[in-house]
Amino acid sequence: MEFGLTYSPAHYNANPIVVAREAERFGFESLFVPEHSHMPLATDFPLAPETPMGYKSMYDPFVTLAACAAVTENLKVGTSIALIPQRDPIHTAKEVSTLDRISNGRVVLGIGAGWNAEEMEAHGVDPNTRFRVMREKMEAIKILWTEEVAEYHGRHVEIPPTWQWPKPVQDPHPPILMGGAGPNVLNRVVNYCDGWLPAVHLNFTEDLRGRFTPVEEFADEAAKLHRLAEESGRPRPQIQCSSEILTRIPFGQLEEIGVTRLMMGVGGFRDPENTEIQDADIPVYMEQLREHRDKLAG
Image 1 (cartoon, rainbow, N blue to C red):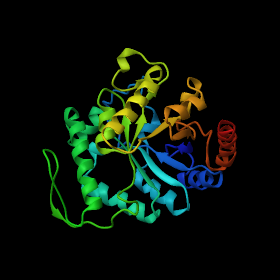
Image 2: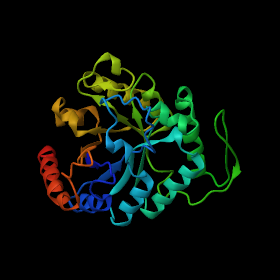
Image 3: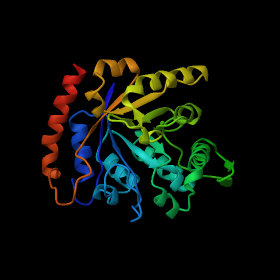
Image 4: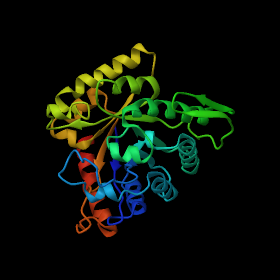
């Protein structure tokens, strides 16, 4: 199992370049960042009475990861998650392949359909079609990555015969991990992705059904995913989880379930007034995370 880090860079917390340098120095395998382009005031935030500042102030993920890749040599850089329905597929294909070139093949693309209806609508996306839009855009992106002359004709995406370089370093393209939960997420992983980013909830209630996977059901869902992949002749999918799951499922059992990457959080979505983790604090914080990682790894 690999150990990676998640971090949400914002205007008030530690520079992601510092986080990336220290993550590599302390031997972490990867650094993942989230995406939200903006937060409309009408946002119905599902996890708190008000939308936290961290969601309002997220850095652009691909600009951030390019900076992180430029100051590291081995650290994988990824998104958890890129909101594909809201993104132009031609630009996104170009951004990811360029980042894969700059990093010499270190990109992992975590994707998802998103949850914020108001955010989607501001990008011209009907929330009711977002899953279909996501699939078409990812199909088009993969064609742009892999075909000398690319074209795609779908219900929501139309790309005429097109040249686009650079192609990614990774063959055939960077790994694609599907984020989310619900009755169809595992089929999406098997149909057009390489792994799963499960949204596991430790205190699940039925009003969260479809948005989160109850921790009690996670092992069965992972087994179902592996079975679906085997039946479809697909490689065994990657599974990437937050380390918070360790409060309910022991490390050894996660390995048995098939978790391939365990993610530790660097800070959180803090308020601007909270200066708990700034640039100078990162080495100390990384040391704590490394100690925790090494105890888990045995």
